Amino acid sequence: MIGDQPVEVLLQELAADIAREAGALARERRAAGVALAATKSTLADIVTEADREVEDLIRARLTAERPGDGFLGEESGAAQSTTGVTWVVDPIDGTVNYAYGIPMYSVSIAAVEGGSDPDTWQPLAAAVCAPAIGELFTASHGGGAWLGDRRLAVTTETPAGALLATGFGYDPSTHDGDLATVRRVMPLARDLRRGGSAAIDLAYVAAGRLDGYFERGLNPWDFAAGALLVTEAGGRLSRFDTTSSRPMVVAAGPALHERLSDLLHKEV
Ligand code: LIP
Image (cartoon, rainbow, N blue to C red; front, side):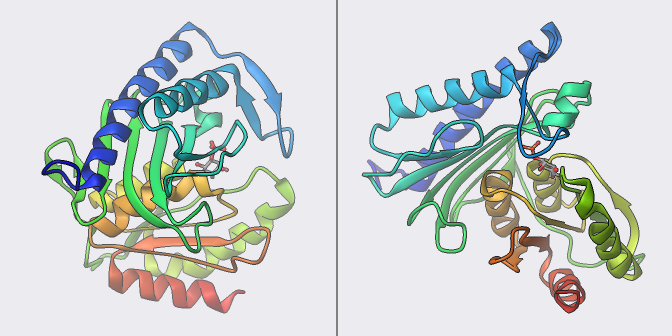
């Protein structure tokens, strides 16, 4: 507690404020035209100048407001924490959407404690800002998940089948396996969506706009904030195959999470 506010709420407010500012910058740069800065793991894995500029803004704000906190970002080096808190940041999640002018992109900011390993960290606060859509999702550990002043809740029943979302990696050689995974879970589904931003997909599970989400090969910054949104909205998120190069993330309401996990575990 700091004053009468739990520290998680203060971290959530800071994450939301920075996500708003970073989202506005990303949107401004998008409108001005996007410059490709480089490619990373494959030709399809791009980074724009805006990705780097937005992460620089976020990092500068966090350093000013909370010196000593750790940092793990998609585009810049990691920094160890001396306070116990680490910020896990994807400056523009859905980079390919962003480059093509598709509005499904987000700024994803999470505060965690206990280091920067997603298998052992404890999420404290989260903000996912979708600036082109005008939505900001937030959560704090024990404080619920929110879209503005609307408290979020995952779906609990899927009588017509589940509306599922997934994604595919940047390496074309993984696409066959990922499509086989889709084939495996489709008996549970009414339909499938592929939005292109894991953070937004997870926010939509938390908001009940999707029943479930699964994807292999995400980086910690892709799901760190969305995971807290889901669990604070009454959902479950798990990772398995974590020693492989492409761990699986599964998120849904409790009953669907169990059914999805059973099917997805069988393929491992
Ligand atoms: C993206 C994820 C998306 C996945 C893409 C990519 P990025 O993150 O949000 O779910 O399907 O392959 O990993 O690279 O835009 O930050």
